[in-house]
View 1 (cartoon, rainbow, N blue to C red):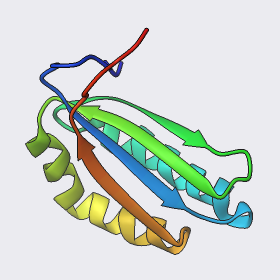
View 2: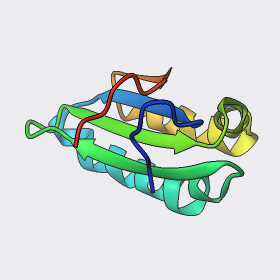
View 3: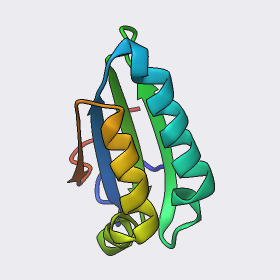
View 4: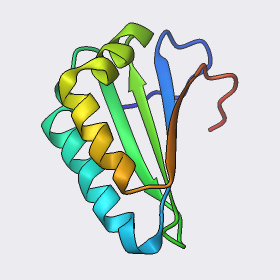
Length: 106
C-alpha cells in the first residue's frame, strides 16, 4: 500500500496520460493488465493507483517503489518496453515523473 509521508525512504512516481474518451477504457484495460500481470510482481514494487478524470481525457497513475532503481529496472525491461509501445498508441502522451513527498496532510 502506498505511503504518503514526508521523509519516507521510497520512490514515488506520478505518471499522467493524455487520452480521448473513445480510448480511455482501452488505456485503462492496458494499464490494469500491466499492473496485474507484470508491474506488481517486480522487485521493489509497493503499490499503485489509477485515476481517471470525469471527461475521460486524462489518466493519472500514482505508484511507489522501494528504490528509484527498482522503478527504472521495470521500465527498461523488455516486457515493459513492449507494453509501453502499445500504451503509447492509446494516448496522445504520457510522462512518468519521480517525486519526493514534500508535505502530507491527514
